[in-house]
Length: 110
Picture 1 (tube, rainbow, N blue to C red):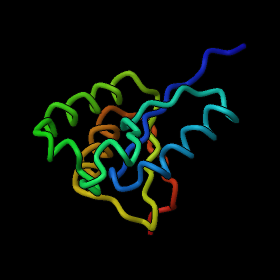
Picture 2: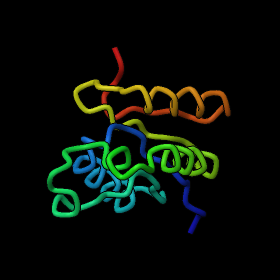
Picture 3: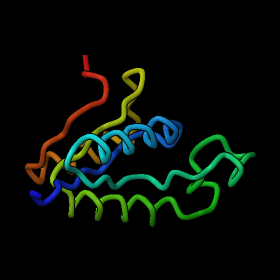
């Protein structure tokens, strides 16, 4: 068996449910290992709809660790459901492109 590619999922934390499905399908159907956001269950932070890291005071740390995931990946897949790309995701796209790595999108950008 060929060594799997490593893909990091990038996108808004409001899409963690979609990212969970994308990660499952990629690992199930492709020869890849998926890295990305920690897909926390709703009960973990039921009063916080998104941006949990900001609420817990660890956003900078988690953003930095996400860049390290990109460093060890072959490419990123942007989970831009509905075409949405936020500020942090745009930064991750630029970071990835600067490294000469492939960027793909769930929804083709306009």
